Image 1 (cartoon, rainbow, N blue to C red):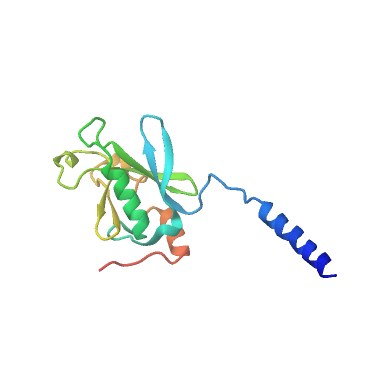
Image 2 (tube, helix red, strand yellow):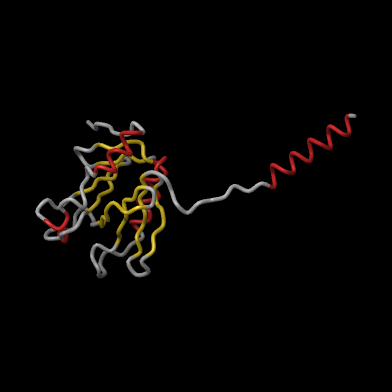
Length: 164
């Protein structure tokens, strides 16, 4: 009898071990994706569960430390003295649908003047801040730090915060 029970348990164990979870290439929630201009491809840098909160007044996301470090290392690998500028671009997406694109410009760069783009900065300890060119009419209604879909997603999961 013990042998039969052991055999049945081994069969169940083998069955559960051999089951594979299907992985999806669509990530749910808000993600920050690296956008490769040359190949027109994206790869996820920050997943939704790595976002701790968002301050809609400061347009600032608070990220998990490891994901912030991963993003920072990817940004620092870039050569910012080549064209096109900014050459490091991320997509802000919800459920893999593009909300807006933002380019990174080094904090001390004078090249940000006159750029009609959404820009982002990385700030210590683990903040990702977006800057929107309010003078650029082409962005009106398209790219906003208070995009309705973005706010709705964050509000649902109680990730809207107020930073000091």
